[in-house]
Image: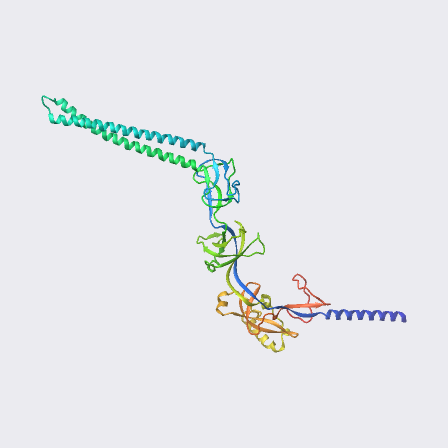
Length: 452
């Protein structure tokens, strides 16, 4: 019995010692402040949008006649014209079957020759009529000198007069026939010119120097030209200068102006930033699902040729930029300590400030950073509070808030220096390890309180 009692007491002693050790281990958890340093850098306020890279000037080459594509031409490198071919002005791009148009041109040429022969005949007829007029005129003058007499009968007198007037009228008819022949010749020449022009349209030539960015026909394909000219090739005149077409919401369009600097990226070159500037804002707005947007043209240099047409670009319109200013993460401006974490000499002011803020607008008294470029540039900066460690406590520093990019905020005020440690939250250390602050980890009440 004594042994059992002794064993029971020993077991209970070990159990009590284990419980004491466990609770001491739990109580060994320590809470410290998580801090970051104030840095010096650049802050940018921008409007984000998405757009498309477009060639600055594009020429759509079409066909003005109908027919079958027989062949393609050669580019400046001697290769068959295709996607990406470099062409000069006048370079042959393609040839359309011209058999019908060649026949029309030959027929029109024959009509011109016929009209020319008709004109020559009319001119010869006129000369003949003029000769007859001169003979009739001389006979009529002699008849007038003799008059109706025994030497010249009345019938002969009248005949000479009639012959003279008839010859005179025939000359006028001959002159009219020449005018008609000239008009017929001009008409035939116009038909010939039209036929020759249509024949020339069978050879598709490049109207500009540039790069073929799209070929929309194949050899053997028949193009039909009716009311609209079918598109055969799309040529970019100059790929060294590109444009970005960006749809900007009506709420932001008032902040966009010509010459405004722009930075953009494309997925084809991750991590690389390109520069440009606003060229103009198109006034023809579009509406999609009751959302009004305006198209903004951005001009950018592409001397390297890396930007390809129709890439998707992520654009930032720079509204305001401050360089070389003190920056603090926004989380430092949102964090607020509990009353017992504040240094004793600041607790009364902290409690009064919290009560005033909480009673006036129902907030927790923490200033949120806002982006107001106009106010920041004018010097009327909003106010905020950051907290720095002071032993086991924290103390406040009032700061002026400037520009913010959504992650960091510009600050200024007395006592601020680069590298200053500011508090952003709490971290709990247990058994030499720092507990992770995972938002999905269940939170359990701990002794000591305090907000995170």
